Amino acid sequence: MNPNLCLLDETGDAETKPTPSILVLDIPLLLERGWDAHCDEILMLDVPEEIRVERAHQRGWSLQEFKDREGAQWPLERKRQAATKLWTYGDDESVLEGLLTA
Image 1: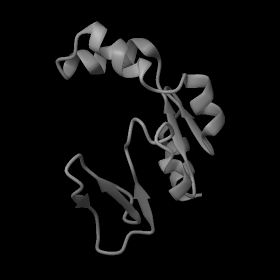
Image 2: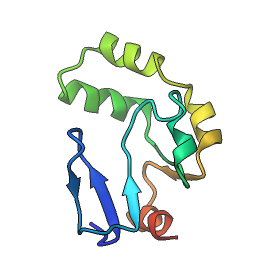
Image 3: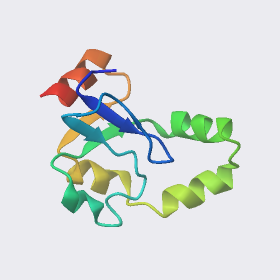
Image 4: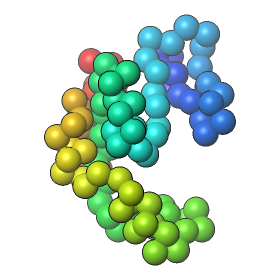
C-alpha cells in the first residue's frame, strides 16, 4: 500500500501510518447520499458487470440481492460523470497508482 494512503475498513478502523495525505472512502452510496461534497476527488473503479456479479456471489449474495443493491445506486454512467478520476478494469495497475498519487 502506498505509504501516503489511508484505507478505512467497514468498521472505520484505518490501516495506515498516523498522518495520511490521502483518505480512501469505500462507500457504495457516497454520491447518492451527498457525501461527495466532503471529498476533493472521486475515483471510480469501473468494473464489468460479470465481475461485479462474481464478487457479489463470493460474498454470498444472490443475483437478486446484487440487482437490488445496484438498483439503489446511481446508474454507472452518472457515476462516471461525477467521478473526477476513472480507472477502468483491465487497465494496468500503474495507471491506478498514478491516479492515486497525482
